Image (cartoon, rainbow, N blue to C red; front, side):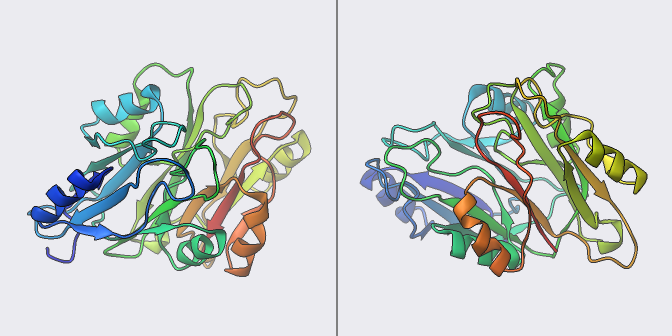
Length: 299
């Protein structure tokens, strides 16, 4: 069990650092508020506990937190954006033991697109939320990436929107789904829409192709090609005339998808392509004034 991360904590000042050091935590020496005027914020971990951490999530509003609370996730009550003037971002974790719970053995942080792309292409799983989300100034995009004890593949993809008030977030977390913690409608004025995925260690169960449709013609094209579409419009509730859907397919003999993520930096596209990551250059906010967002796929 020593190879697995069993405990994580966050420091936002010198007193926190001294306490965590005295408790035997190891510090990851990347300031999560880098490039802002906020506190120096660091993540710490231990590998000597009895049970591995298997899932981590981020929240930046109360609605995102509800499902995590109801699903039994543990919140680290230290704002990762402390003093930076951006969204209040919190880290949550779970020590699950189900079919979709694969132990985390390493945590890394990226502070530039090239580093980010290399780690994602290398098979690390990336949390979509920028840890400097809406901070001022916003000089760096900082992302958290994790490595698991075994290679994983994406086997299921769904989406939810904020009109759903029947507790689906709790259900999704309980059923092993991981939420991409960034709204596909960011800045568009629509409902909060999130993509979710589930993992397997069996490549034969994996999704092998992922596509995005932004027009009726593309919708019909993928339908004819026997893709399955995710039911929720990723543009739900905006004033755009475009409906944006995610499509997937499972085929034998095709390389399985190891990871998916959201890319919100157009100037980072070249770095991801250079690293061998597929960038689906169809804006999830097509036709509205929201943040440009692309889906990235690693095979």
